[in-house]
Image (tube, rainbow, N blue to C red; front, side, top):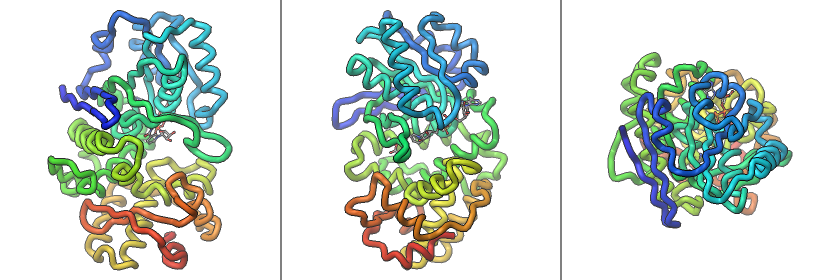
Length: 353
Ligand code: NAD
Ligand code: GLY
């Protein structure tokens, strides 16, 4: 079993465990306290053997889908927990993908002003990204993840065997974030050089599943290192947003339909590479490599021709934008990204593929 500790500058400690079949040992993580399970209908149906380990009155099952990651579901969960008389020393376990994890995390940080949280991510995206690092929250009509908190889980239990039931579409969604780690690895300032970019270059598309435990561990280690140094995204953590400032308007303009977050990030990384090439930040070689890798794993889908003015307007609404000035993470060398500010709008427009 791999064990990685996140020990942030704010004295918050998360223990991350990664092992195949860890889901069969969930009870070994139980201590002498009440455990509330929050999951969704799909996951509960797929993994009843986990749900049965909890008292039925301590299980909360929400509807499945990003559209339920909202204030209403948040309040419903809080009310159920209060009705079930949750106490401060109790613990909430989140079993599911990023939607369940983000919502349950925010609930855990809010109910009774905060109870212990354990994340059990079941999608590739949640294992590599969303369950790590304490970002929690829900969407509002003004945009995604605009309400929430930084609340790291005490424990994160990762069992790659959950991925056996994940469909191709969701798998690719996680792969989009994995490629992101490959393109930002050196900017994560880790002491160890994993060379995820090299590993992904060597792998054939269909072999990635065979190496997935190793790949998850690399991504988790990179993210843990970043979060250790900068949990509240004052600086270093911004590197994790590579591709995301473009992904946000793509998802918004497509109404979050017909495109997954991972696909949108993959398109975003291609656009960022195009901009970097036009600004002479990278050479043609690395530009081609970025595109080749994204295409090899078939991460992008069909996207419409966007109204560029609208696109850029939405980019300016991004949480990370300051004073309406667009600053973007651009690739500048293999596995290195850099925040570039004051990008001129014509260059930006030209980068929208
Ligand atoms: P998701 O939670 O909606 O899960 C995708 C689908 O897979 C759902 O239908 C779910 O029921 C199903 N599923 C889950 N586990 C399964 C399994 N083992 N087998 C079969 N089906 C399974 O989506 P996601 O991609 O996991 O997460 C996306 C969310 O994560 C977004 O809301 C995004 O904002 C958030 N996110 C958060 C962070 C963060 O740092 N907190 C980072 C990235 C993304
Ligand atoms: N997914 C970006 C972050 O956790 O900061």
